[in-house]
Structure formats: C-alpha cells, structure tokens
Image (tube, rainbow, N blue to C red):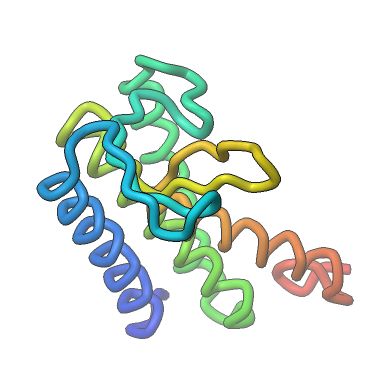
Length: 157
C-alpha cells in the first residue's frame, strides 16, 4: 500500500516539474538562452521529441508505452512491498514523479519541455527538467543503497 507521504512526494515533485515547465514555456522564447551563472548554468526552453540526450527521436508512442509500463511496475512494487525501508521507497516515488511529468508532456504536447542547461568543464550538458532530475536522483539513490546495504531489496541476501 502507498502511504500518504509517498503520494505527497509524488504530487509535490510532479507539481514542481509541471509548474516550472509552464513558467519557462510561457516566458522564454524557444531556444533563447538566459545565462544565470556565467559559463556554467543557463535557462533555455527546448522541445525534446526523444528521450535522454534526444535518443529515440520521434518515438513518442514507444517512449510513452515504456513510461506507462515503468510507472505501473513501480506503483505495483510500492503496493506489494509496503514494509520496505523508506530509503528505498522514496527514490521509487521520485522515479514515478519524474516518469509521470515527462509522460504528461509527451502525451499532451508531443514532446518533453526541457529548460535547465549546464556547461561542465566546457561540455554543454544536454538540457533537462525537474522530472529528469527526480528520475536521476531516484536511480542514483537506489544504486547507492544497493551497493552499501547488507541485505538486498525485500530483505534478500
């Protein structure tokens, strides 16, 4: 069973994602760059018709189907593993919120709205959004937990 805190985490992250995307979409012209930290961080509104790094461009139905499958699998896992540790459940909630945010964009607009840009050691990192951050943070936390936890997920050795 999903707990109220988990539903709230999903809804809050999803709301932040959708609100920030809408603010950028309505206030920044497509592909215009607004430098926030010189040579490091900028805002730019882009339309991503693919997945990360724009792979699978134009595969809207396929990417949507994968997202729906992943969301259903993660929600099912939360319901079936109600006694799992919070530090495993919370990252799953972040991943659900991220997948939902990008799925909503993909279904409603036909593309994902990205706007956060970074230049790291001269490399112009692909533009992303809050949903992408939630997904990445969730995956990273689960990876770290599985590396350092004595027992595996669901108490397996």
